[in-house]
Length: 215
Ligand SMILES: [Zn+2]
View 1 (tube, rainbow, N blue to C red):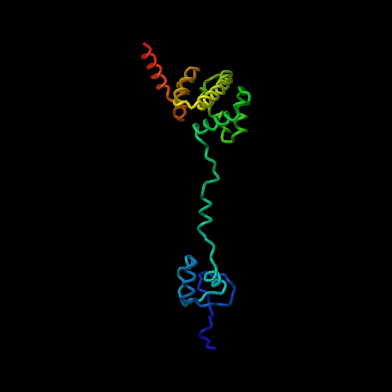
View 2 (view 1 turned 30 degrees about the vertical axis):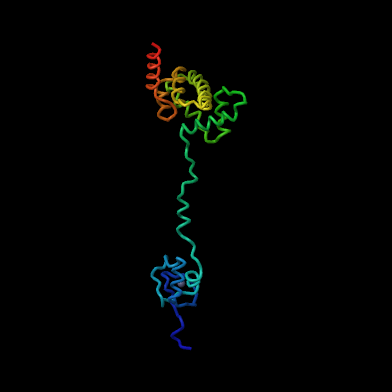
């Protein structure tokens, strides 16, 4: 047997860590097979005639290497981060909650109302607190804040009610009601920025127009 055909190595893979003493020569066909499997992307320097160890030969020519790109890419998809819904979306969600509970007793106690929303829809966990923060002026006394929280429960029922009546002009209806309930301009404008209500100026213009039409 001519000694020239025996492959003595070493393995052509950089930093080969296999302990095999069995080496194989890469034929043109072996290179094509490895390339077709996409296995040469890690070893672009391999060429026909190069010798590699038997374990590497099996891995590169005969097997499919694991896709290295898929796993890290998936790790960066931020699907696990919950996105907080907008106030407008939360009002829609609250409306469905109140609609499904329309035959239950109305809950006027703010803490009970808040609890009911949280328990029914986890997306509404901070909704009541957010609405209070928007609608109750910071400089209110603790007593007034407590009273205001009760009023906000009524406002939220009203919002849900107006929505369920398929009112076309929901934002204006709501702003008119809020203005009529003594909610401040700032609070109405805050809801307007959240896309929930029209601005206080629109309410003012609307009322002015109504009065002009009456005269
Ligand atoms: Zn090797």
